[in-house]
Amino acid sequence: MLIRLVAAAVVAATVLLLIWAICRSTGRTMPRMAWPLVIAASMFGYAVYDEYSWASRMRAGLPERVVTVGQGSGASPFSPWTYLVPRTERLSVIDRATIRHHPDRPALRLVEVVLLERARSTLRVNEIIDCAGKRHAVLAIEPVFGADGLPNEADWHALPDEAPRLRVACAVG
Figure (cartoon, rainbow, N blue to C red):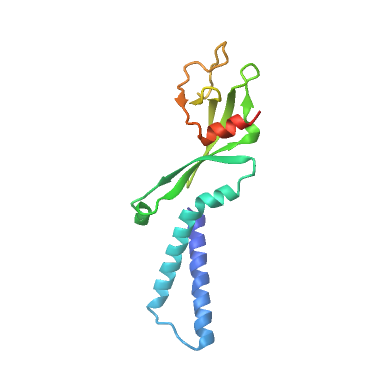
């Protein structure tokens, strides 16, 4: 939060200095009442840019082996424009290098889903994906597996054929 405030102040100071330099070089003066408006508009513009570009900047910073499998949008009363154009606040990603498969059940994949959220801590969730049954279940912190290789007391949820997490997990051989 502090970094974003400092960045907004730097952007405002930069815009203010550019306008001052343009006014100085043209021999014009800017009205005194315009200075606070320029500062406010530049800080507001940076805040909106920062909110709406978060997801694309986050994706750009991830390695190529990490694939986005879901995203969530949201709105806030503190940013009323987000009710008109929602911003992406959450991303779910899977690192293809961490996908593991069961040696006796080739249709099962153990996947670590990383949940990224704007201005929150990153969470890691282990899921088991059944490629043949097109379903998935979130695993407990310390899952107990039965003799059949499936987790005991798993809460299975169906996945549609075009589900990104199914496509990504089942593409790994």
